[in-house]
Image (cartoon, rainbow over the protein chains, first blue to last red):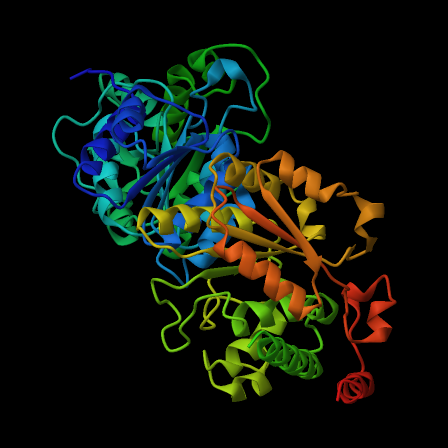
Length: 318
Length: 273
């Protein structure tokens, strides 16, 4: 069950398999590799392009190829793919309103995946920025099983997508198949308090709810992996039994990210559910340390989150 | 035959220049000076048989693609597209009105326009993607791009210039509307681009240059570029005058942001008779 796998390897392998039977796929990389990508480079050298360290051109080339009817995968490091070329992404979004553009943006290095490389390589802003663009779907998987499903969807849906992948191999969370239909999955039913997490934070949240369960705190957990096209009715009805919810993301809070998505859901439903947001609080992280250490500094480690859940649990009453 | 085509091109360029001024009269927010410098370029591409197109089927697979990377200078293409029946000619009279097809910045809702290029510096990269895609489909289509010289200040253009040279995208033909002035003055004083030809050569491009207002020269050089079998992307440095045809604009270093008065427009159109 605890089989660790890299999201990008799983994703790219799915695309490579499909490229054997679909000649209309191009894979572009901004000089960024992976083991699975070596297969694409070897087997489909005419449909793989290393554009160099040039994200602006990566996106413009992708738009051009998509205008010619190709399905394009544009692969780069997440903070650079989501920010270096934001105007080009905006053009993609704009053009997608008038033309079918099948561009799949694969950003690797969600949140603090590149923990030791410092804030230039951390990705705190991409959820906010990519959610902002109309016509671009945003996926934020928590494990390789969901990632594989997203790869399948990407082969069918002919619209722009931003797929935010973790940079480190992570344990699988889902044992069987997982459906992307609703955009989220209930990992644990609970009462009073529900945790809503995306990406890597779902791993931390799972530990939190499991450890608290033995202490008699029966909080729920929902993993949200489709950050735009999720089913808002279904998600809200999954929350309606709780008094308090806590959002968890490896990104800035109070700036239009995952927390805002949930806050909007509550507002739209005139909900009285109380919301607590956990994430980075509007400053970059220059401290040295691995992911766990950096989480601890920012009160996002398992211990700190447990305290928050207990607080919410008590406030929620009976 | 040669003389006839040049006469036709001169006549058409005159039509396009006058109609462009009329569009500016109806829609004063259009960038008239930038649009006037590209009049002969558009005229020769479409009426000179350089650019393969089918007005009845604008998305015809085998067409040559044209990306107007300096979108604000694309107004002078509207009269050409209307004349060739890409859309009804009366659309010209509706520019800028609510729900009108034509706007001060071209977009791909307009038949014959491939993309949206109001934001500068992205057309060449898109064109490179189109060129690779067209080639992969076995099409002989060429991808023409119109860039301004001021636009070359954008770094994204140079990413694409490097890329096209490295990949030897011989089906890419860049036409540089080298009008030498950007919004706040002469390009050479803002960010000197010279030696321009040397820069393109250094990146693996085949470089051509001509007077961008001589339909005769433009026709000859574009024909040469079109049939060239050189295994490189090609750039035509078309030396133009910003605001060409309106003396008041031609001598104004800030002509980019100028709008002409109704009287001046009518007077300029009359002077062209």
